[in-house]
Length: 169
Length: 446
Ligand code: FES
Ligand SMILES: [Fe+2]
Image (cartoon, each protein chain N blue to C red):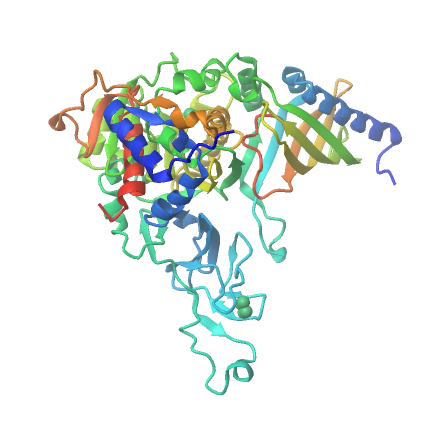
């Protein structure tokens, strides 16, 4: 059952598919063009809590708490010749599924939920890292283009099994 | 194929220690070797003080967090009277893990297995069907109460425990390093608070590489962290920004100081600058005012590190200072779990607290633009340190030995030994000397 028109659903869905492609092909600068100037990009720390205490997401502690300005710094850093953590780069695959689109609070916005599985290998060592999460996004249409206005990445981990977060999710 | 006799772990370590003393070189094998890790667990992590939590993580009666020393799980609780306890998280009945949530608030812990119930002081209070099971007299509740960690002490908000009942007092263990820790811990009489739960992540890197880096490696910054200088995250004029400074060895620990423009104090808000100049002692203030330097990074042996820094969170933005505390928790040879907290003065402006936390996570923590590259180094060292070549591969720890003398005692107001440069290996050598002392002499409190 769709909460939006098929067309809107399809546009939001296509946005996420395109975004995953841009990230997996490591066009970080192009990805930055896909977010709004007032973007909020958040990944809260998660704590293993009792069932009655909710899902354990911290309201204060984050792995990412980014604005357009700090994302710009992160992308600039990757663009230098000295970002050792991503050179040689990670090989990533963003698997984006379970896309649900609902009307946003504002007329030009939609609220999108999706599941993300990020598969990552690095260097020549064996093994891989997996990060699993739900993403709650707000997309906004600006001059006919959908852009990412807000993303909250809700980890399925209380402990990250990856040595760093040098890629975007 | 001819089998080579394996050299014993002790012989490897003895040789390594001797070469470090005589030639200023370290055997790469100590970076990543399972048999050495077993010794570390017994001779370091079971013998001395290990940091578990900051008091502000459990501010209210009933609050608790779950922590570990290697494989031993402890519940750090605050009881109804506000007292802090460190309780071994194993039921005294049949050994079930009592508390299975990482944080919360509870007056009691009820064991899922047979239902023994303990108060948050550790006292056994309820035994289901007590008379049926144990007779009319019931059970000796003291005998089967939870076991406290052999030692627990708090140093300026930092909760430590030790598995060694004979460990010397914490204050004595921290010793001369306390003078330097004040710059992190005592900037305001209001004390510090953690900003939320710690970040936790697994790194395929040996804990020692992070600990030794944080005790003093000023030299790596011009190479490892170049990207952040180029990108305008670290707002410094030259990659060699950390060449000048002061490196310290104090007790079993160490740190290094970084300069700031006179009067700038890492860009702390005026209210914190005022309280810092008020709250620190005369000699400490002299260092801030006259020398215009502040501790950047520090390690308290074995695995607790401190970092004060100041970085931009917006393009072309101002530097914002922050303080992060971290432990490098070994989970085997060449693998650790990092726990990283951001702390801020409780009386700092709210807006500043939020920005300070953002400056921390832009630069340190799992996503930090500096720590990402540190991770790359520490994992790389660990990976190539795993093989047989590393057992005959000696690494350079000689920087400063040829030409740098300590600052004369009457020219430096702090305790310990101060060196007038940062591209030197004195603190890192001190780390390894301490390490060998624990492993080979056995730590007896000296
Ligand atoms: S193991 Fe805890 S009550 Fe039996
Ligand atoms: Fe570093």
